[in-house]
Image 1 (cartoon, chains in turn yellow, blue):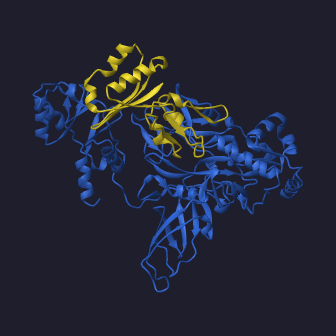
Image 2 (tube, rainbow over the protein chains, first blue to last red):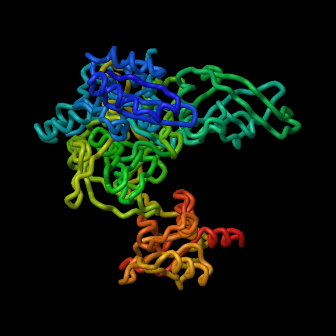
Image 3 (cartoon, rainbow over the protein chains, first blue to last red):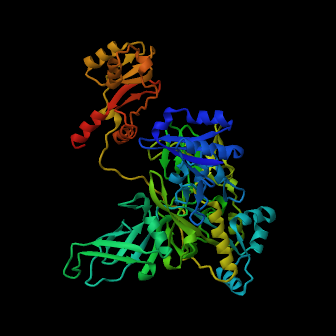
Length: 131
Length: 499
């Protein structure tokens, strides 16, 4: 299950993820991590069976957590199914189907945002997630 | 044997007309042959849905009171052309918003009008005795306009060149993002479903041909601009009443770091009047070849890397000189199909009748490049020819001395054979000195060096310097030996001299 973590930059001094992985044995996959002057953001994939424990530990460390059920949304009224998103997505979330429609495996999205910037009809948007 | 458009229209009226889409017709012609296909089919519908930058609309606002000549006008902050009478305007698809930049433009204004959304109008004028008003602010929607007429100077290209990128840098183009080193290629056009490939000699398509334009009724009014029938790059100039259009069949769009445009859906019906026309509508994707161009070369005449067919392109990859390049569409095949299907349904339901063209489009028109009367300097005109270089095994001290002696701040690093291997700047040397470190030129030089060509316009070299935030470009010959250097300072001096 994908979650988005928002943290203060000072936290990167600690081997936080490593600690949680060692404590829970959860195979946490870091999809994306950014750090800025005032806050940082990370998207991680957590196995479902360890999800509750991992989330609790992140919360205890003071991270803000939102659950990304669907990391990306497509406005099908604006989408023209051109296929540029299939070109740019590093994960391969979008696929051109036999009938030339574009399928979307939203749950695999890591919220890098490149498709949002490239989509010519502004049909794509990243989800804020559920807190 | 022949049919006439009148006979076909009679069949549309009595519901007996036989209509198929162009992709289906290709199958019919290859299965039954052109003669039988001609007997079985009355109309073939075509369709395409792609970004068509050369599009726009004439709008008539009616007069304000007191009256005003709309000279400088913005619609949703997008500049419209007001140099035609008092209250006529032209809004072009690629004009960008002055406040929002490239993400919103004329194409979006046209879509918003057709979607019946409100549009903010702001206008200024110097004021005259007959048109005294100087400023105006209002909000309108399409029904408030007397006329909203789409008029697109160049639409529905017969085929379009495929774009790829040989350079080591990512390019943002109107053909979408092009990854470095031929990692992808992008193409546009619906291939065998597109209008012109189904009637390449204009046996039926001409001035006055009634078409499906963005969900409404439109007409071909002539050859599109840059119409190049001999090169198989023919185009259409089209018009249509925006009040009858459907937002499903057009879309305001924007390409990153290029700007706004408009996706347009166009369908042209081809009446199957004789066997020859039937045969032409049997065209298949594998018959339609187009050029693969290197957009890494920023010149008018880009080298053609290969000829590829639309069936290759639609397969998702092409092979060029042993290299497999992934291909991606920019136009929408699914909406192109929807255009052809919708037009087909309209004809079957007796809602769309065919028109006789009054003049076929030209099959001989030729297009020339721009005549330029003012010479623009080339790199070879301004570059320094006696280039001072250093060797890879020079130490910091030696490089510094070379720079000071030569009064230069950039120095190419060359191998023992005299070939370019890197670049060093005064900054690289200053850093070493500041850190008190000892190093050889070959260890601290920048290895990925951008170069300029002898016959490259200085303007392009300047763009490279600006875009990649560098300060000098060496010029190399075919053996990679440094034959010149051009720096940002030289370009600044050139501009400073007024040329």
